[in-house]
Amino acid sequence: MKPHERLNEAMNDRRLELRLTWKQVAATAGISVEALGAIRRGAYRPTDLTARGLDDALQWNHGTVLGFYPDDERRGGRRPQEPRQEADHDDEIDLDTFVPESPAEKALMALYRARKQEEANRQADRQAIQEQLAELTKKLDEQSRKIEELRAEQSQKGGRGPRRSA
Image (cartoon, rainbow, N blue to C red; front, side):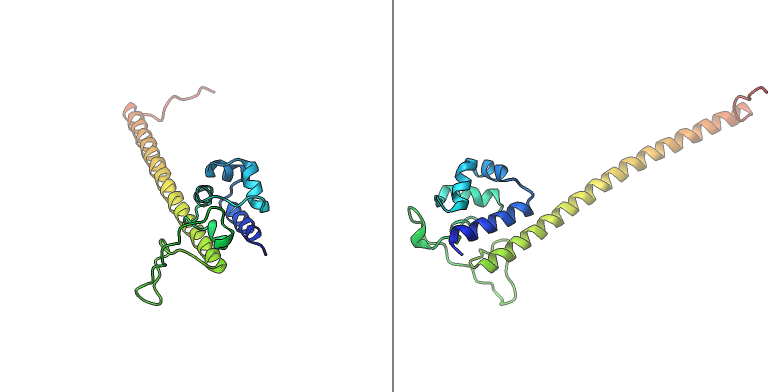
């Protein structure tokens, strides 16, 4: 599979995960839909600036888009990447700063970020539900207080309210 085909497939998977349209990806990346189409078809290789915009639009680490192209295929060249940070322990990796290099690492990182976003969304949903519950509880308490006041008022008047005539 050619680099632009791998990139197109990865961008499409990520776009779908984020529930974005191609138009939204292009707009967020600061490029036209036509330019994005040319990149996806392999007619155009993204510059560093365009690739960075696509990385941002797809919520990828900077350098991910250009990582699909071998160095000799990149137009205009590119500064070498900083060396990967090694974990202190073999089984501990800081996934928030990890820079994936292989397609498998990139796919796993995409899954990690998607799950992390889902957890953040669930937490936000829980917070919103708690706030709604607090508001409803407040309204219920207020209504209960009003009912008790009306009952007390009626009992002071000595009856259960107006009687209907038959």
